[in-house]
Image (cartoon, rainbow over all chains, first blue to last red; front, top):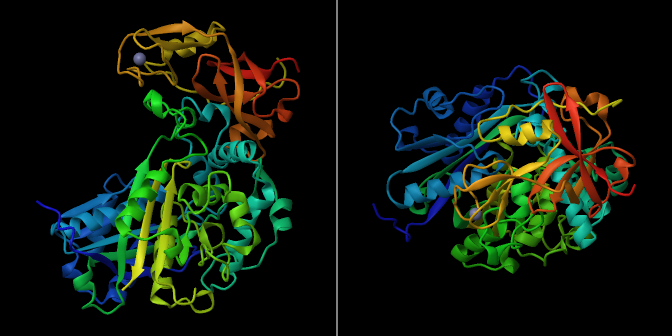
Length: 404
Length: 137
Ligand SMILES: [Zn+2]
């Protein structure tokens, strides 16, 4: 098998369910609905799909979740089929796996789909607790001390504030921008505009993160289909090209992450709580795409918490390390600013159904480049950057998309 | 001790049992690599720095410095509901590794990064947890 690097790949179709509170819906039903919409959007014959990647379901998991979904979709014989366990970072990985499968000729078209009903599935209110506890990595060395996902990210935020003087107001600016964009998106879960003061006055979850620094809990799902650019051009929707992708993973256990356990002595200090391996993923994505930061018209930046997004502007190279706080101020990341971010509203205001959260960043990147975003459209958007993150700033994927 | 912060008790494994046994005896112990001197945490099967298997359980000073700290207001689980707000911290112990724990004792909620701390052992039925208190406070 040899890669055919000259074979360009593209997203041929996207689809999503409604998001927010969808009582009575089963996660598998949401999976099927999202997949059907992407197939219909692409106008592709289902028999052409020979790859399937899912991200399981917190609410209704199965060790072979991808088999359950392929049965519901009637996809009998696949040459790439698995359940990705990379959480919120899964979609950049899935895109890259699909890229390799399509470039090598092992797959003709790969369907990536994710959905869950985290808000209503476990019983209203229980989803917050389920997902908060889910993130705890080490049942033996972290959970006994009362740590949870917001607390993990809070430890990162405190360190960033300590080292670089980042302020709660700067963190809040990200939540404000996402909500502003969600207010322009009829599909978003939370659309009432908020101010920096609203964020700072919302309930403290784990200092310095307030409730409005934390992403939503939602029901919903999305899907996209990857094939060759050549094939995508024959299909119904405008193809969106994958210009470049990169991924990098470090550690989940906070002590390992902070201490750079296992790094060679001469690289100690290169990575820690506030310097993530996203730098490596970004290097590869920009390198493959052959574009610069100035070429990026719109960015969909994974925002499980405000601090998650803030550090990425630094590690992606949009600003220097430590300057993320200043970067997000003054409307730079809002529509009309130099780098509009999370134009759908992000995990902070559009939706966060758990594992599927990152797929909406990718779908929004596609819709922006297709110029179909209405009031929230970035004029003449040609190049979009999309990130996914999971496991407390340790799993990263970066994709750069281009309008065909 | 009154009002000891509760826990969801860890389940020791073959590799970690000496760590938890040490806590029960009020000794903070970690594995030191005989080949490269690296101290490992959490308990390891192999030195993650040099791949040596010659790891010797060694008693630490029990002192460390706060690498980061957050005050948790929303409990991580119902078991912790009675304890909020409480301090979750990453402690860089003197011998090098960074471990997650709690800051307890006087002015725990005012803990800052770089504060000096020392270990305290809290008995919680089936397990004894290593937590930390601020030195000189
Ligand atoms: Zn060693």
